Length: 467
Image 1 (tube, one colour):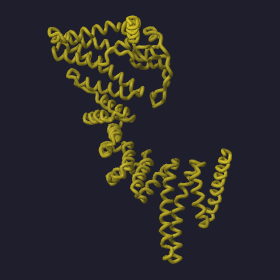
Image 2: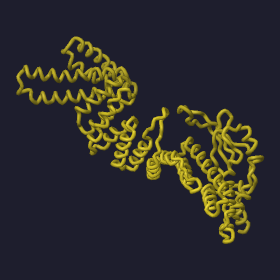
Image 3: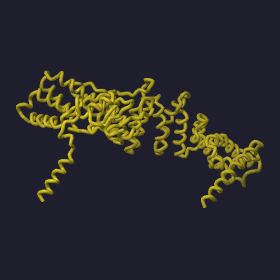
Image 4: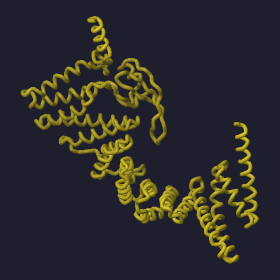
């Protein structure tokens, strides 16, 4: 029994990270984890000692100790250093699968990934680009260091310079971590680091906050689907007057864009809609917000669409806006969801005429004409017994006229997707109905009937082979 207990205890000891009982690395990468942990334990004892607790030097030293603990895993590393130098500082790595991450101009860049035990590095062209720390001596080391420096300053002005430098070094480290996690799409971690940076910058010794940090925190929380935290940070960024600028230096409504997504994620549709309305008023040139407005109103059919009509009409006046077809299409969908078919048809047609290369625009414009033609046709049939022949022919020709308006859009859709069976079938049906109206329509009827026949034969042939 004693022997088995002894071996069980040994197994437990062996299962703990070996790094905490030995010196790691060499040269500038050398660290003694055990010594750092002993220093932390001593600092904990010092601040609990009434004789030492009130001395500013005790707290400065504590800040330095926790800074050492935070820096230890990646000691000796810096962005851009040769990987050959990294290999001299750390033990031989295990090479992991290459990852592709977005770089400049949204182009994907391959990164070589190496696991050194204490850190995982990401390199390109044999140079270190970034790293993640695996070794954690104290997960709150930076927070404790910041608190220590802040308290040292509050005790005596003599601590000012070291405390100030320490706090700024912490902010720099936290921002760097946030950037790394954001690139690696570890959004929750990135958000936590950016928010930590923002909080530390509010200490009296700094008192100047970089509002981009609280915005990045909110943006990353949105991406991580932590919507409540996102809203809190994004609203704080808006309160501080932070404005995102596009590549051309113009302000845009990113804050409201992410607030919309966060409220939508919480299924708080009224708040989401209000954020969009507020955003487009503040940033009238941000087409993304305009694009989301009609989509929002298409989803929430209980909302009064008249709220956005003047806003969208103003947006439609900018004929140079490349987003214009999408804005038309969004309004068409919002009207269609409310069975306001004439208005829906108006905007589907505008979208289709503004962009001849989008299948959905063309098909939906045609579908609205066909829907209207079918409705008029049913009404004509219901009244046919009471209509004189000349009046009946007049109404019939009006119905045919509506159907004819659908054909150019169906033909554009066919050109975009030549093998689309539904489009060919509809074209064959409509042109057959209208074949007697002109020689041109007769030729179209023959053409699309042949295409339709060929598709049917192809389908039957395929079914025969599978049986």
